[in-house]
Image (cartoon, rainbow, N blue to C red):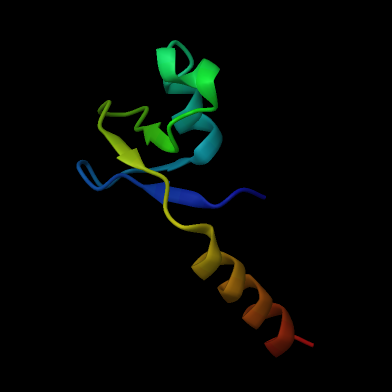
Amino acid sequence: MSDRITCSFCGRPFTEEEGRTQCANCAVLGSGGCRKVRCPHCGYESPLPPRLPGLIARLWRRLINR
């Protein structure tokens, strides 16, 4: 299950995969990518959220639910 990203412009949620699909024609993609996603709803481009806080939250939920 992939985490949902909320667009900071329109406020609608989308997955990282949906955001990367919107950037498929970007020239930067061939050089390793730019670590940004584009909202499929409004087209606003923003950086990916950091992964560490999400990872810590998932680990914490697993520990609590044992």
